[in-house]
Amino acid sequence: MKLPEVTLLSLLPEDREQFILDNQWAFKYGAQQEFGMRDERCEEGEEVISRKTIEDSIDGENAETYRIVLDGQKVGGVVLRIDKEAAQGELELLFVSPEVHSKGIGQAAWKAVEALHPEIRVWETITPYFEKRNIHFYVNRCGFHIVEFWNKHQHGPAVPEEEEGNWSMDDEMFVFRKEITNAGDWQ
Image (cartoon, rainbow, N blue to C red; front, side, top):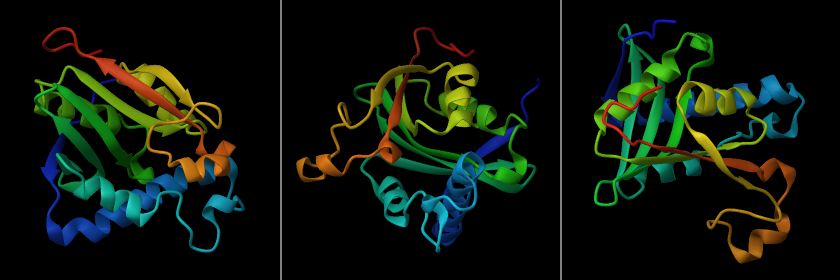
């Protein structure tokens, strides 16, 4: 499949609120597809990804936030955390509007991210265990490898000690890594 031509445009302050809402809708859509409309993650206005999580990503140290644009339309977004000194990058958030899923937009956006940062040799990201579309996307479309599975027995470093007892299946995540060994190393 030929990938569409997408552009990454830096997030403008006046688009911040819509970026957050679009991101929440994309995550909610994924959960609804997996668990249905009655799932507790999606009821009564609660979001699968909180405003605070998105804002913390956008406002984080060394963060870069972009809109994914296709044919002049905003069709998604991406938040990166870049450490140029260590040549490492973290994909904090990537979403594509559900209305345009399965058109190669996410893969084209990831290719644009790698082109934007050819100095980055190692990329990492995480995704919930239930997001089969994301797992397929990262492994089969973008060349990432699963390197860790966070669960109640083995979890990420960001979990405060007082929260360890509250861990549930809903918190299970896969950690992905992609190592770039050659310039232009794209699958």
